[in-house]
Image (cartoon, rainbow, N blue to C red; front, side, top):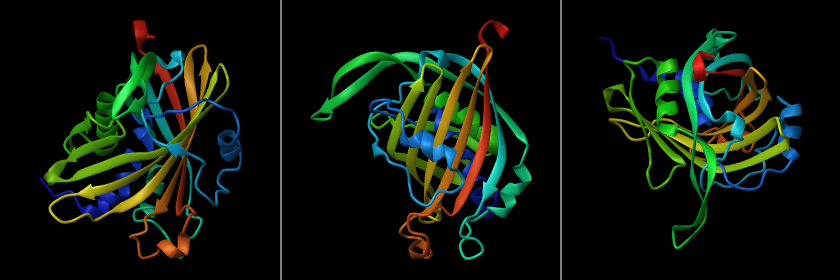
Length: 265
Protein backbone atom coordinates (compact mmCIF):
# COMPACT_ATOMS: atom_id res chain seq x y z
CA UNK A 1 0.00 0.00 0.00
CA UNK A 2 1.67 3.22 -1.17
CA UNK A 3 1.98 6.24 1.06
CA UNK A 4 -0.39 9.13 0.40
CA UNK A 5 1.92 12.02 -0.49
CA UNK A 6 1.56 15.41 1.13
CA UNK A 7 1.51 17.04 -2.30
CA UNK A 8 -1.42 14.93 -3.39
CA UNK A 9 -3.25 15.59 -0.14
CA UNK A 10 -2.72 19.33 -0.50
CA UNK A 11 -4.04 19.13 -4.06
CA UNK A 12 -7.23 17.57 -2.78
CA UNK A 13 -7.66 19.73 0.32
CA UNK A 14 -9.88 22.12 -1.55
CA UNK A 15 -12.35 19.31 -2.30
CA UNK A 16 -13.00 18.69 1.39
CA UNK A 17 -13.17 22.41 1.92
CA UNK A 18 -15.71 23.00 -0.83
CA UNK A 19 -18.23 20.54 0.51
CA UNK A 20 -18.07 21.35 4.15
CA UNK A 21 -21.05 23.55 3.34
CA UNK A 22 -23.31 20.70 4.36
CA UNK A 23 -22.17 20.78 7.98
CA UNK A 24 -21.04 24.39 8.37
CA UNK A 25 -23.13 26.37 10.80
CA UNK A 26 -24.74 29.76 10.76
CA UNK A 27 -26.42 32.26 13.03
CA UNK A 28 -27.98 35.66 12.45
CA UNK A 29 -30.93 37.11 10.58
CA UNK A 30 -31.60 36.26 6.94
CA UNK A 31 -31.41 39.55 5.04
CA UNK A 32 -31.14 40.11 1.29
CA UNK A 33 -28.28 42.16 -0.04
CA UNK A 34 -24.48 41.91 -0.15
CA UNK A 35 -24.15 38.13 -0.59
CA UNK A 36 -26.33 38.08 -3.70
CA UNK A 37 -24.32 41.01 -5.04
CA UNK A 38 -21.09 39.17 -4.29
CA UNK A 39 -22.24 36.13 -6.24
CA UNK A 40 -23.18 38.30 -9.21
CA UNK A 41 -19.67 39.73 -9.63
CA UNK A 42 -17.73 36.46 -9.34
CA UNK A 43 -14.81 36.02 -10.09
CA UNK A 44 -14.06 39.73 -9.59
CA UNK A 45 -13.54 39.41 -5.84
CA UNK A 46 -10.93 41.62 -4.22
CA UNK A 47 -11.94 41.40 -0.54
CA UNK A 48 -13.43 38.94 1.93
CA UNK A 49 -17.21 38.76 2.42
CA UNK A 50 -19.11 40.65 5.15
CA UNK A 51 -19.66 38.18 8.00
CA UNK A 52 -20.47 38.01 11.70
CA UNK A 53 -18.66 35.84 14.28
CA UNK A 54 -19.75 32.21 13.92
CA UNK A 55 -22.00 30.92 16.71
CA UNK A 56 -24.65 28.20 16.75
CA UNK A 57 -26.15 26.05 14.03
CA UNK A 58 -27.05 27.09 10.54
CA UNK A 59 -30.82 26.73 10.28
CA UNK A 60 -31.71 25.79 6.72
CA UNK A 61 -35.10 26.26 5.04
CA UNK A 62 -37.64 23.50 5.65
CA UNK A 63 -37.37 22.40 2.03
CA UNK A 64 -33.87 21.03 2.73
CA UNK A 65 -35.15 18.56 5.33
CA UNK A 66 -34.48 14.89 4.51
CA UNK A 67 -31.94 12.63 2.75
CA UNK A 68 -30.41 13.75 -0.56
CA UNK A 69 -28.15 12.55 -3.33
CA UNK A 70 -25.69 15.37 -3.97
CA UNK A 71 -23.90 15.88 -7.27
CA UNK A 72 -21.13 18.49 -7.29
CA UNK A 73 -19.35 19.61 -10.47
CA UNK A 74 -16.40 21.99 -10.71
CA UNK A 75 -17.20 24.34 -13.60
CA UNK A 76 -14.70 27.22 -13.28
CA UNK A 77 -11.42 28.01 -11.55
CA UNK A 78 -9.08 30.99 -11.46
CA UNK A 79 -5.84 32.12 -9.81
CA UNK A 80 -6.17 35.94 -9.69
CA UNK A 81 -2.57 36.60 -8.57
CA UNK A 82 -0.84 34.04 -10.81
CA UNK A 83 1.94 33.58 -11.64
CA UNK A 84 3.24 35.53 -8.65
CA UNK A 85 1.11 33.68 -6.08
CA UNK A 86 -0.52 30.28 -6.65
CA UNK A 87 -1.81 27.89 -3.98
CA UNK A 88 -0.43 24.34 -3.78
CA UNK A 89 -2.25 21.95 -6.09
CA UNK A 90 -4.14 24.59 -8.07
CA UNK A 91 -2.93 23.33 -11.44
CA UNK A 92 -3.68 19.74 -10.44
CA UNK A 93 -7.30 20.59 -9.72
CA UNK A 94 -7.90 21.24 -13.42
CA UNK A 95 -8.25 17.50 -13.90
CA UNK A 96 -11.55 17.71 -11.96
CA UNK A 97 -13.18 20.29 -14.24
CA UNK A 98 -16.61 19.09 -15.40
CA UNK A 99 -16.25 15.82 -13.46
CA UNK A 100 -19.38 15.19 -11.32
CA UNK A 101 -18.79 13.87 -7.80
CA UNK A 102 -21.69 12.25 -5.90
CA UNK A 103 -22.35 11.65 -2.22
CA UNK A 104 -25.28 10.96 0.10
CA UNK A 105 -26.09 13.76 2.54
CA UNK A 106 -28.95 14.48 4.91
CA UNK A 107 -30.57 17.30 6.84
CA UNK A 108 -32.84 16.83 9.83
CA UNK A 109 -35.02 18.69 12.31
CA UNK A 110 -33.43 19.45 15.67
CA UNK A 111 -33.52 21.84 18.61
CA UNK A 112 -31.22 24.74 17.87
CA UNK A 113 -29.68 27.00 20.51
CA UNK A 114 -30.38 30.73 20.18
CA UNK A 115 -27.80 32.89 21.96
CA UNK A 116 -25.66 32.10 25.00
CA UNK A 117 -25.08 33.41 28.52
CA UNK A 118 -22.11 32.12 30.54
CA UNK A 119 -21.52 29.61 27.73
CA UNK A 120 -25.02 28.15 28.12
CA UNK A 121 -27.85 28.50 25.55
CA UNK A 122 -30.49 31.06 26.47
CA UNK A 123 -33.23 29.23 24.56
CA UNK A 124 -33.78 26.69 21.81
CA UNK A 125 -36.12 26.44 18.85
CA UNK A 126 -36.87 23.85 16.17
CA UNK A 127 -35.04 24.06 12.86
CA UNK A 128 -33.56 22.06 9.99
CA UNK A 129 -29.81 21.46 10.37
CA UNK A 130 -27.15 19.40 8.68
CA UNK A 131 -26.22 15.96 10.02
CA UNK A 132 -22.64 17.18 10.13
CA UNK A 133 -20.79 14.02 11.09
CA UNK A 134 -22.61 11.87 8.51
CA UNK A 135 -22.28 14.44 5.75
CA UNK A 136 -18.66 15.20 6.49
CA UNK A 137 -17.68 11.53 6.30
CA UNK A 138 -19.72 10.87 3.17
CA UNK A 139 -18.31 13.87 1.33
CA UNK A 140 -14.71 13.34 2.41
CA UNK A 141 -14.79 9.72 1.23
CA UNK A 142 -16.40 10.72 -2.05
CA UNK A 143 -13.42 12.98 -2.79
CA UNK A 144 -10.50 11.23 -1.11
CA UNK A 145 -11.61 7.58 -1.08
CA UNK A 146 -12.62 5.22 1.73
CA UNK A 147 -9.04 4.11 2.41
CA UNK A 148 -7.82 7.62 3.18
CA UNK A 149 -10.66 8.86 5.38
CA UNK A 150 -11.02 7.08 8.71
CA UNK A 151 -13.61 9.25 10.47
CA UNK A 152 -15.09 12.72 10.74
CA UNK A 153 -15.77 14.18 14.19
CA UNK A 154 -17.62 17.35 15.10
CA UNK A 155 -16.55 18.93 18.37
CA UNK A 156 -19.48 18.38 20.79
CA UNK A 157 -18.68 21.67 22.52
CA UNK A 158 -18.15 23.66 19.33
CA UNK A 159 -20.19 22.66 16.27
CA UNK A 160 -18.09 25.04 14.19
CA UNK A 161 -15.07 22.77 14.53
CA UNK A 162 -14.74 19.60 12.45
CA UNK A 163 -11.84 17.15 12.46
CA UNK A 164 -11.30 14.76 9.55
CA UNK A 165 -9.10 11.81 10.53
CA UNK A 166 -6.95 10.68 7.61
CA UNK A 167 -4.59 7.84 6.88
CA UNK A 168 -1.13 7.84 8.47
CA UNK A 169 -2.37 9.74 11.54
CA UNK A 170 -2.98 12.93 9.57
CA UNK A 171 -5.82 15.29 10.40
CA UNK A 172 -7.61 18.08 8.61
CA UNK A 173 -9.05 20.54 11.12
CA UNK A 174 -11.64 23.07 9.90
CA UNK A 175 -12.99 25.81 12.17
CA UNK A 176 -15.69 28.23 11.06
CA UNK A 177 -14.90 31.77 12.20
CA UNK A 178 -17.50 33.92 10.42
CA UNK A 179 -20.73 33.63 8.46
CA UNK A 180 -23.80 35.38 7.09
CA UNK A 181 -27.08 34.40 5.44
CA UNK A 182 -29.67 35.95 3.16
CA UNK A 183 -33.10 34.69 2.06
CA UNK A 184 -34.34 36.94 -0.75
CA UNK A 185 -37.50 34.85 -1.26
CA UNK A 186 -39.13 31.59 -0.17
CA UNK A 187 -37.26 29.48 -2.73
CA UNK A 188 -33.76 31.01 -2.42
CA UNK A 189 -31.29 30.68 0.44
CA UNK A 190 -27.79 32.21 0.36
CA UNK A 191 -25.08 31.52 2.92
CA UNK A 192 -21.41 32.34 3.28
CA UNK A 193 -18.89 30.82 5.68
CA UNK A 194 -15.29 31.79 6.35
CA UNK A 195 -13.14 29.21 8.10
CA UNK A 196 -9.60 28.29 8.97
CA UNK A 197 -8.19 24.92 7.96
CA UNK A 198 -4.90 23.22 8.72
CA UNK A 199 -3.20 19.83 8.82
CA UNK A 200 -1.96 18.09 11.90
CA UNK A 201 0.20 14.99 11.54
CA UNK A 202 3.51 13.51 12.56
CA UNK A 203 5.13 16.88 12.02
CA UNK A 204 3.93 20.35 13.10
CA UNK A 205 1.28 22.05 11.02
CA UNK A 206 2.30 21.87 7.36
CA UNK A 207 -0.59 23.64 5.64
CA UNK A 208 -2.74 26.53 6.82
CA UNK A 209 -5.12 28.85 5.01
CA UNK A 210 -8.46 30.63 5.16
CA UNK A 211 -11.37 29.59 2.96
CA UNK A 212 -14.69 31.15 2.00
CA UNK A 213 -17.73 29.24 0.75
CA UNK A 214 -20.58 31.35 -0.63
CA UNK A 215 -23.54 29.31 -1.84
CA UNK A 216 -26.97 30.14 -3.25
CA UNK A 217 -29.55 27.33 -2.97
CA UNK A 218 -32.65 27.36 -5.16
CA UNK A 219 -35.68 25.16 -4.51
CA UNK A 220 -37.36 23.52 -7.49
CA UNK A 221 -40.31 21.07 -7.36
CA UNK A 222 -38.22 17.99 -8.18
CA UNK A 223 -34.76 19.02 -6.90
CA UNK A 224 -32.58 21.68 -5.29
CA UNK A 225 -29.83 23.34 -7.30
CA UNK A 226 -27.05 25.54 -5.96
CA UNK A 227 -24.33 27.82 -7.26
CA UNK A 228 -21.28 27.63 -5.00
CA UNK A 229 -18.18 29.81 -5.07
CA UNK A 230 -15.09 29.06 -3.01
CA UNK A 231 -12.21 31.45 -2.39
CA UNK A 232 -8.86 30.59 -0.82
CA UNK A 233 -6.98 33.25 1.15
CA UNK A 234 -3.46 33.07 2.53
CA UNK A 235 -2.94 32.94 6.28
CA UNK A 236 -0.66 35.52 7.96
CA UNK A 237 1.88 32.71 8.44
CA UNK A 238 2.29 32.30 4.69
CA UNK A 239 5.46 33.94 3.27
CA UNK A 240 3.35 35.44 0.44
CA UNK A 241 0.69 36.84 2.75
CA UNK A 242 1.65 40.51 2.31
CA UNK A 243 1.55 40.12 -1.47
CA UNK A 244 -2.07 38.99 -1.32
CA UNK A 245 -3.54 40.43 1.91
CA UNK A 246 -7.37 40.31 1.58
CA UNK A 247 -7.34 39.15 -2.04
CA UNK A 248 -8.18 35.53 -2.88
CA UNK A 249 -5.36 33.49 -4.39
CA UNK A 250 -7.61 30.75 -5.79
CA UNK A 251 -11.26 30.77 -6.90
CA UNK A 252 -13.52 27.84 -7.70
CA UNK A 253 -17.10 27.66 -8.95
CA UNK A 254 -19.31 24.60 -8.53
CA UNK A 255 -22.72 23.54 -9.69
CA UNK A 256 -24.59 21.51 -7.06
CA UNK A 257 -27.70 19.39 -7.50
CA UNK A 258 -29.59 17.69 -4.67
CA UNK A 259 -32.22 15.05 -5.44
CA UNK A 260 -34.44 13.69 -2.70
CA UNK A 261 -34.01 10.08 -1.59
CA UNK A 262 -37.34 10.00 0.25
CA UNK A 263 -39.63 7.26 -1.07
CA UNK A 264 -36.98 6.34 -3.67
CA UNK A 265 -37.44 9.66 -5.46
